[in-house]
Image 1: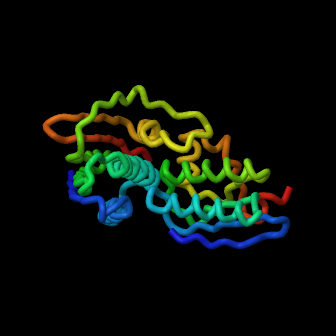
Image 2: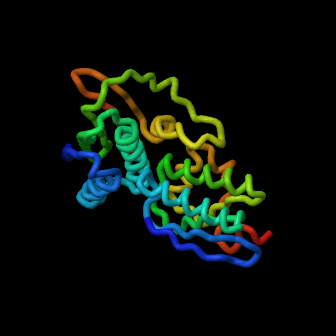
Length: 134
Length: 110
């Protein structure tokens, strides 16, 4: 199991910084199937965008991404120090066809094998798990 | 993300995107589609063949463009979606709303 960690502050950092962080992991772990990298990166970027977009802080949100990968799976957590909130993942369903927002969380649910949200000890934390399938 | 625009015959505007269509670049795309419609080109093709990543913000910009072109009597169609873009379109059921064509040139040719 190899673990990668990165702290980001947005602004000035944004989702492009998260893409750069993930690219480092993909480069160092070429055995991860390409289809799984696509799914994992799409999910993590959605969660990071969600944090940046809905951050209640005016001074910028500080968030941490931790990614642990083994030969069979990858797990990631993203946590921030923004205002705590409660969220029922089950209540987030795909919106109507012509909605311009609201697809992020439902999409993450369909991209990974396990998805959790927790708000406690001063932090909001999203966690995802993905098994590698050849 | 870079956006290159060109006009085909019949008042069709092609916007070729290069890079990642995410929350950073989505507002840029919205503006470009609105500019095309304001210039009288309400048939718009978004060429996605050089887009390696899209997120839900990018999808929102495409839907916004779809609505604004249709309100002006035109349409917005997408061309050349790459593997990640196709996955996102399928997972969100947007593949039934946004018609994907192989190339920008064929999107309005029928």
